[in-house]
Image (tube, rainbow, N blue to C red):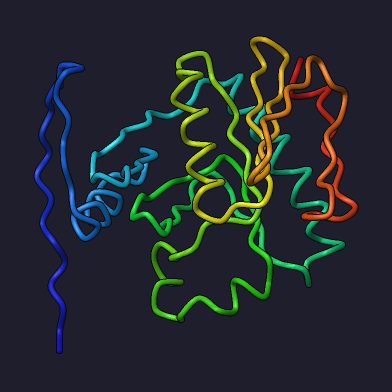
Length: 202
């Protein structure tokens, strides 16, 4: 059977803050294919979230973050898989989220059925990082971090370069807030991983 390539129509539209667009998971996947330059997310209620490309400062910080995580992965790759900010995950609550960096244990990844691995994997990362940019709402990111914890994440970092703060999230525990730390430990979730924050703060 020959599949026809979907046709895309370019449409420019400005949405007031009081309006939102609802999309199904299938519609979201079509939008993501048609707009690879955008970071799209979908809430559990089906609301489409459009994240434009980041500025150079956030891009440089995220490059350091993912680079350090990948260097750890080269030594501990048998423990799981790492992903960058372009990766979407379908959480158990139906939301589709794209953390700035993430990791899934090998045992949990192996349990994901093969078909979803070709698109958005139906899994919440064990570990994830959200890196706040100037345009990001702190409260919205905090809600997202809580959502990750409620959907199976074991460790999460919300890094806020503007205030030189890190919020550490663990399921069932109160959020730990660190001011101007020099490094972060992956604890028992990512054994041996230490994130140096000098390039994140600069």
